[in-house]
Image (cartoon, rainbow, N blue to C red; front, side, top):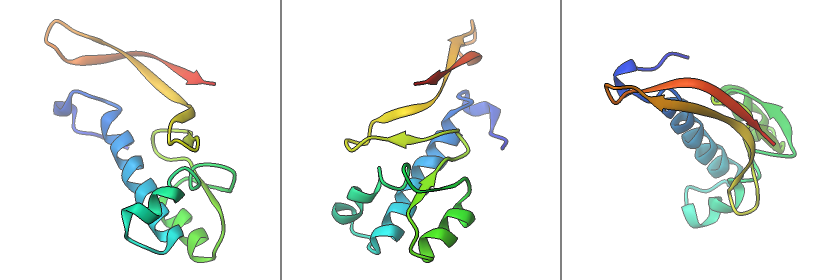
Length: 110
C-alpha cells in the first residue's frame, strides 16, 4: 500500500482505512446502518472469528453469516469490549528538523 508522502504520517492512511473498513463490516454484520446498533459489532469483527485481511474477503464471509476476525493493512487488530486495542503494531517516529515524522522502529503488543 502506498500513501501520499506529503501527509507526513506514514501510518495514518492505513489506520484510517482500517477504521473505515471495521465500521462498514460492523454495520454489515449487524445488518443496519444505525450507529447506535452496529457499535456493538465493532469489537466483534476484529476478534475470535474467521481470519480475513481484505474488505472483499471479509465481505464474503459476512454475507455467508460467518463471524470474522479482520486484520487489515495496518496489521493485526484486536479490540476489547470497550473498543480499545489489545494487540497491534505501533510505529515509533521522531520528528525531523523540518517537522516531518520519520519512522525509526515499531513495537508489537502484546
